[in-house]
Image (cartoon, rainbow, N blue to C red; front, side, top):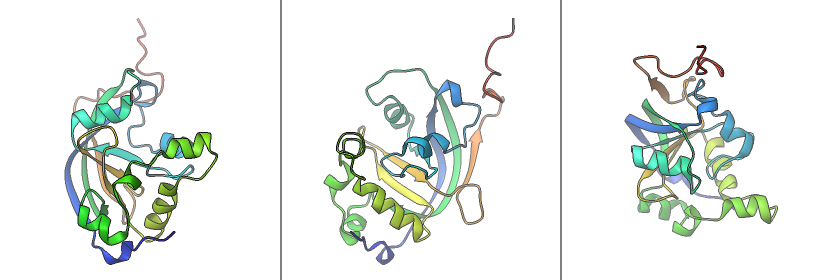
Amino acid sequence: MSWDVASVGGVTLKGIFWRMLAPRWSYDPLSGAGAARAGGRWNEQGQAALYLSETHAVAIAEYQQDLPRPGTLTGYEVEASSILDITNNAVRTSIGIDVSFLKQAWKQDRDISGRRPACWDFVRQVADQGWTGLRVPSAQGPGNNLVLWHWNTDGGADVRVIDPASDLPRNQSSWISRI
């Protein structure tokens, strides 16, 4: 299947976004390696992605996904252009996706049916056409997410972790008390 993403313009987003970090990996808050290992709704396996949320509540809901676990809520300053905004109904209609596409059971396709999720084909096409990322509705409740495939590189989004007191660990063992 092919989607007509060339027919729509991108948006520029600038502001503070949020992400929950697993404590074990909080020393590397700009990594998209975890998303690349498993794949996600908006990135195929092997494709690094940085998933950010527009609010604290959405970041927490996305991280927990019905599995309460500890995490570190972290803020990010982001300036990103060439973002395909599929929270916009007119954009979705123009490119040929609907609400059911946004909510597809991609994990069931991948894990149970052994099929490649259609959302991965969409993401591959969009990324291959030079988009920096997507603005998407959260599948966990009201609110939106920003999914970046290109950041802190030429042509990518500018992303900076907000950590003025250097509270985040610097390596995987630095948060362990040495008393």
